[in-house]
Length: 289
Image 1: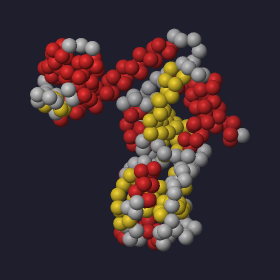
Image 2: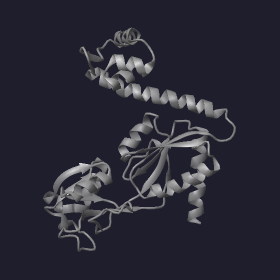
Image 3: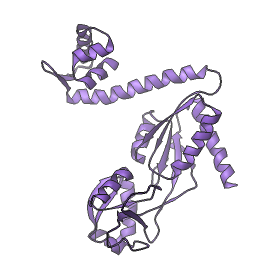
Image 4: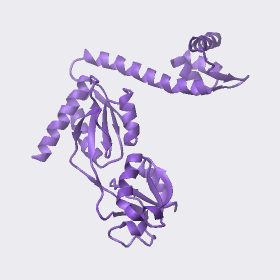
């Protein structure tokens, strides 16, 4: 798998062989044996370059997961026998101000357990759930609405209020709240998650038929760039970021989104991840008191 991924990245067997410190004939033989074993053609070959076939692109995705899980398993076994708490915790998160809470906890946890390393992955809730299900993430921070029936969860205390991010020169920029009728005919950028779209459609009500969707997004920071350049106004919640020449105005009636920390029910977490979750429970208890 490592040989295959190196060739896929370099698109050149000679260069890949040099990086892997093996001979070119040995590498070519390994690739042919892999194709024979799988019964598919993985590469389109030419004199100077090789490209992945459709089957090769599928294997690339699977190979990345296999190598990542292999490396994680090796690190987990190594950490199990080290003195003190050690290891890696992979934390997947969407864009939410609740990440500030987790960041403070991570800082305190690292101060107490400096041998624990965190790997942060940022994406929307659906992408984070997919990586949780594939075993590539230990703990996820998901914004609602989201189906958490397959997960253990801890609900976080802060809720996000939805609003509209628009340019300061927009006719709507002087309003203190945005009602559905204000957005009739306005080019909008909306979250790509189907569950979020459905929730917001309920807020629009009868105005929904007059909406003009300019595009969808999965990360707010990129949506802000689109707003700044005149693509449209973005339906989102504020992350505390300061965008020059942009203004955030909340929706009325209020639309709020909660957040949950989740982990797979049937998966055994590492000792480091279990200790981190217990630290989170104690931290939430302390701030609630």
